[in-house]
Amino acid sequence: MGCIENFITGMQPPWSDGRFDTPRFLEYVFNDGKGYFHPSAGLNTGTAESITSMEILMERLETQLRAGVKEYVESFNRINVLPDPENYTAPFLSLFCKDCIGRGLDINMGGAVYPSVHGAALMGVGTMCDSLAAVEQVVFTHKDATIAELVTALKENFVGYEDLRSKLLAAPKYGNNNDFADKYAVWFVDFLSEEFMKYKTPDGGGYYTAMAANVSNIYAGHVIGATPDGRRASEPLSDAASPTYGRDTRGATATVLSITKPDYTKVACGTVINQKYSPSMFEDGRRDKLRALIRVYFQKGGQEMQINATSTEVLKDAMDHPEKYPDLVVRVSGFSAIYVTLAREVQMDILARTQQE
Image (cartoon, rainbow, N blue to C red; front, side, top):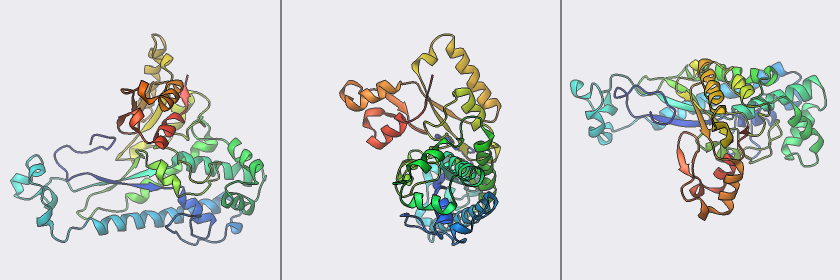
C-alpha cells in the first residue's frame, strides 16, 4: 500500500486503517472498567483485589479486549456506510481498478474485484508484554506487592512507590529473547488477530490487524495512566512491534530472536520493527553481519524492519542546533522525515530508541 500494509494492487477499494491502543484495557481491569483519565470506558469485570492469579487477570483482560474490538468494529462500520454513495464516487480511481469498467460500477459501489479491508493497528505490544511479565513476577511469583498495592501505585503515578517501581522495571522485558516476557507477545498477536478476524467491513471484506503506530503511540500515551511495566502516566506507549525503547538491552541478535516469536502470518495487514544502529555497524565487515541478521529476521517470519543509522549524539546535537542539520533525514515509522522539522516529542521518541552497537 505504500507504508506497511499488504494490498492487492488495482483490485480493492481505497485503504483504511485505525489505531487500537491496547494498554488502556489494563486500566479497565484494575479500575472497575474506567480509565485513570482516559475519556472512554470498558467493562466492570470485578474489583482488582479479587484478582488472585495471572489466570484470572488474563481472563479479565481478554474480556475487556474482546469488548473493545467489538466496539471498534461497530464504530468503524457505523461511520463508513455511505447513505448516498452516488455523491462519493471516485471516477479517476475507478479507471485504474479492475473490474470497475467491466462492471460499470464505481470503485466505492462494488466495482472492485475484491471488497474493502480495514487495518486495525495494534499499539503497545511492548508496554503490554512488559506489564504482564512484571505483574506475574512481582505480584504472583515473588509476592513483593499485592494487587491492591500495585493499583494504588499506578493511580499515584508511582509517587511514593519508587521501590515498587524499581522491582517492576527489573522484571523481564520483551526484546531480550526471554520467554517469560515474550510469551505475552505471542498471546497478544494470536488473541487480537483472532478477535478481529471475526468481523467484516460493510461490503464484506476482512478486518486485518497490523503492528504499527506511526507516532500515534505518543499521543495514545498522553491519556493513559501509569502501567505495571514502570512506565509513568502520559509517557509514550511502545512503538509498533518494537520492544519498549531502552529495554532491549541484550543486543540486536537477542532482539531479533525475541520479536520473531509471534506468528506474524496472522497479521495480514503488516508489521514493522523500528531499530537504531550506530554508524559503525555499517562499516565493512560489520555490514556483512548486519545483513546476515536482517536475513535471519525475515527467515524467522519478520515482515519489515526500518533502520536509522544516525548516532544518538548527532540526533541530540540536531535538537540543540537545528540550523546545522537542514537535510538530516530519519525513518520515523512507515515514513521518513527531516528530523529538525518533527515535533519535539516525536524527536524524543526517535532519540529514545535503543542504539544497537
